[in-house]
Image 1: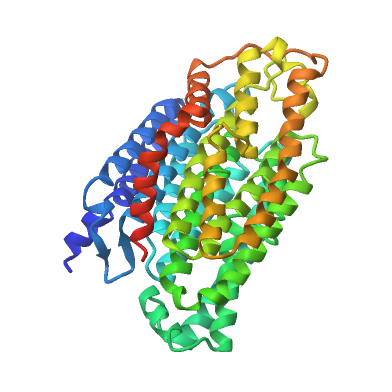
Image 2 (image 1 turned 90 degrees about the vertical axis):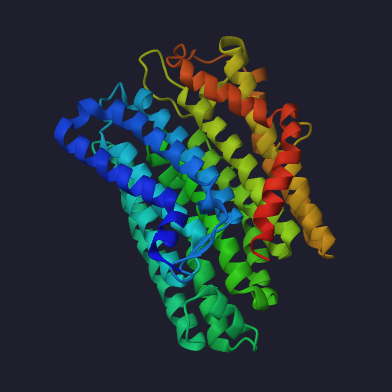
Length: 479
């Protein structure tokens, strides 16, 4: 395998890496006055990286002796990552405009984080796994504390950094255990070693690795950072955290579980099932008394990650395909919800985050209320909104392998989450109007909300066919 061939397979990461360095030089020479141009340049790079997936980078096989996998599974995840990253860049200028705190480094940090997330989705070795995860995390720590003069943002960055360092240590310890007992860090080699029987040391290594990755998807019991970081970070950053890194970490978890730990499915399934149940229950119960919309969406994120894990718990190609479909619809629902949150500004243009401020929104901003209601119904999985379909798929995957009791429990826990989603709809449509929000300041944001709302509406069912083909092909790449 030539170096040239390997570089061709890593073309999306090469585009983003070289492009981000070029934009960084422009930022160094031109300063913050070039921020908008750099932002659109970053969006262009993400679009170019997405188009690169149509070539060998999307289905070319192994690169660098198995360290990197260029397959349809990685391509599916990367496309979602790049879309979410582009939206997070596009919505930032309008949010930061009033405080003047948007700097040219913002889109560059998201690009560098996207490089790490791409590596996570394509990792074929525990070392490339760790390098990709840390590259994503280092950029994320800075993004969380991007508003340096905001106490909440600085606190969010510090909490994320400290707990992220702890999770990184746990992951590294698990990697060292697995390497010590299997004598390899390659996923294929680990699978061969586990096929001979699972030793106690290998089992502990699996537990620690899954714990480290669970932190990145904020699955219970490694969710403690999520509400505080989501609330304290700037809203465009929160939208980014809730979408792209979740897809990357979920893709990484699926690849590790299926490719590296496939022979030990019965062992890791117990961990995934516990985390899925705990996430859906805690994500539903803890959100009920929240008064801040961003904290509520943080618990909503935990809740939805739990449902996505049900598909992985099946351990089958259908289960993986269901999880990928879930993540695709989840990205649209989450980005749409945070785009609506960006519209919550008082008459002075200052962000408002209280749920009470949504009172009577249907009478002051009917279009915004309708969009928010669609996202809430879809997150709750209530038909005929499109959010119902991926939940049906993950439960169907469980029933397909005989785990129908687990599916029944999962369906029951979804009722808990529906309560607080419907509470927001009730607040918007039945409570007395609160002080009206400022008029929409960005037609671009309104257009993005409309696109996301159409996707999660009943019209989204038209995408079932293409989604099924894409997710099915992606899942088969792992089996």
